[in-house]
Length: 329
Image 1: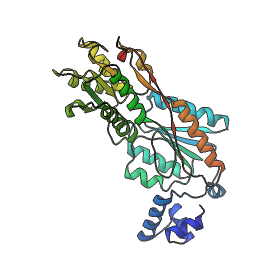
Image 2: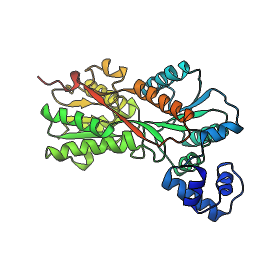
Image 3: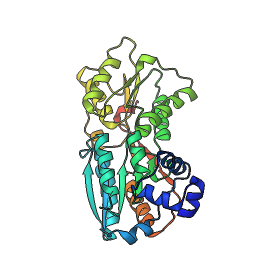
Image 4: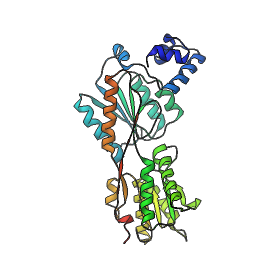
């Protein structure tokens, strides 16, 4: 879609569209018309047209939510491998899960200081929505689906379903759940929905007070496992939304004489190095994080080379890696 076609859809002039994307003056009514049309069509200005008036930097901005995250490190490894081969360097910024900082970095990158952005997303707020609609450079999002942008995702729903199904087939009848905030549509909402779908398909009910929400930390997993496993009728299997949470749960069980997997099976998602060092090695889902980074980089390169890219979402497959924490004899 070119600017003329977009202007017609928005019901404004081409010059109004140009002013909108270059922070020029517009009446509130025209700005709203253009924002509504962007939301409807996913339109963004031609990258080639912007390149006429901006300096090519051979820099790509990469926004990560947590510097110490193993999954983020693996994704960045994939991104850098592809982009370095094409002569690009990475400008890596760490938001420390501070959403205001993410918005600030997007604003910084919007001002033509990089050729493109790869955003490892977790939670999107209205502030994110507002700035993403006005980006002057191509943006690829990793880890979440976001309308109007190229995205690389993991199949969180099916992964959660599959690992829950595994524990049911190993004899699990009384489930526990330790999730994360549903504001994170992938790790929080999709994994919870996959877990619940598996229970429903096998006609298993879960007590409401057996569904807990944790932070993304091992300590939080430990604390939530204590709540579940100190009950008289404690769960005999626990789904954990992340490996950190799962490792915390295994440690609590070990410290309090609860045998894993005989008394309680525990599984996580991510297949991090933690899975191999817990007292009972942790069953998990292997996501292809490096591949996600590579695919995101390829998407960005394509966006830089072509004028009109139709936004698409690539969902990667997964593998179950079963270890001691669910292997009942």
